[in-house]
Image 1 (cartoon, helix red, strand yellow):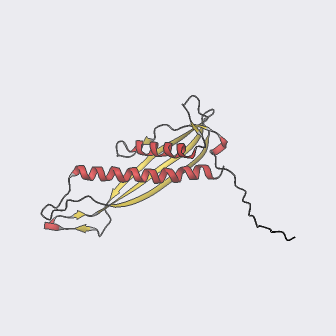
Image 2 (cartoon, rainbow, N blue to C red):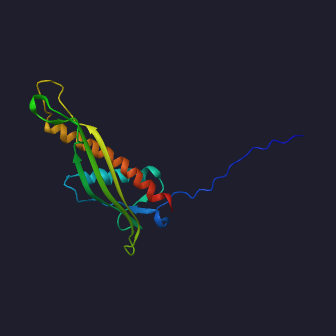
Image 3 (cartoon, rainbow, N blue to C red):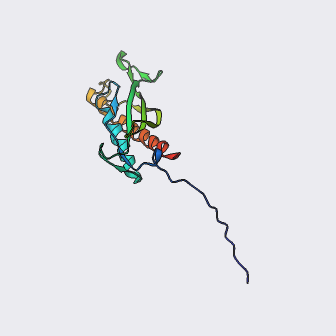
Length: 172
């Protein structure tokens, strides 16, 4: 009788966990050191969403949490890339905008306020500026610009907080 041997590859993986192995966390509202009012809400909500999606820890109140995951929105820069300007009727308009965001995240043990983990994150996103498609109108409504900025900032927050959560839990 012949035997069939199947090759199995075993991978020893340490399951992802919060720094220190804690399982009850609180995520306070991010500090906002930028000039973009309300942007801290996008980043706080994006990080909470990542934590909830992973089902690895429990979001708790400040009094019950073992650790706090604290964020600080350090800087938001809006810029038009050079060489990307159109000039209808002698008016310079940029067709693209770039947002650069810098965020600091740290995990702090609540019992003694010791920092267990911290990292800085930076990411940029370029998007098309909103414009009105009528040839005689060479500018877009300021409300469209504001809306486009915030939509792209929200998307950037999701991307950055997904990366932050992955990095926060990968080595512990």
